Amino acid sequence: MMEQEKMLNGEWYLPSDELLSRQRNKCRQQCMKYNHLTTNNTHEHEKIIYEILNAGENINIEPYFWCDYGYNITVGDNFYSNHNLVILDAAKVNIGNDVFIGPNVGIYTSIHPLDYHERNKGIEKAEGITIGNNVWIGGGCQIMPGVHIGSNVVIGGGSVVTKDIEDNSVAYGNPCKVQRKLEE
Image (cartoon, rainbow, N blue to C red; front, side, top):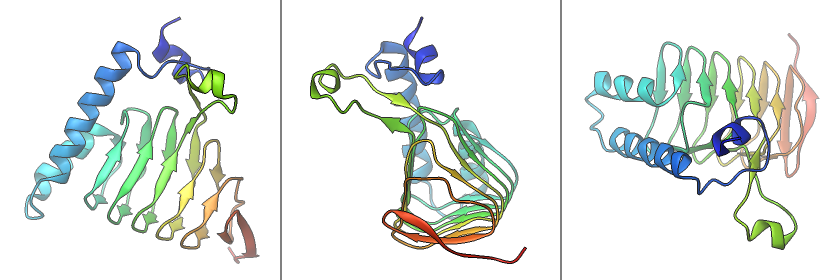
């Protein structure tokens, strides 16, 4: 089985594989091009962001934006991210409609072995992340592998999301926990 297939199946794989390295380098170049366009060139921004990821309409991502592959990211309509969004997308990252993300947010699918012998081999695996509709993620949040954030959720700034967050919630903290429910 190829390393890319292992990666996409959530198995341990070698990210140093030649194909995966080429894919990451291509994505890095696209992100760099996107990040260095002038703000007056909205058409060119849109063109490049649609080359990088699968996106709906009305997408606005402030520079700097970085991701590993791009093809594992799906973003719905009416998406806004403030500066310095990082998405490590070795697994699927599905983001719904009407999602707003504050500055300096990280969305991480990659997992490394706890055993240093295994970790030193350079292997990793990844678990997908889902973010529902009508979600606001505050600045400085970190979203960890395998997390599902429901719809109509507010994640407070600086939170580290390590577990699923249910629909219609306000959640914050480290680790992030539901603090109260919102009315639908």
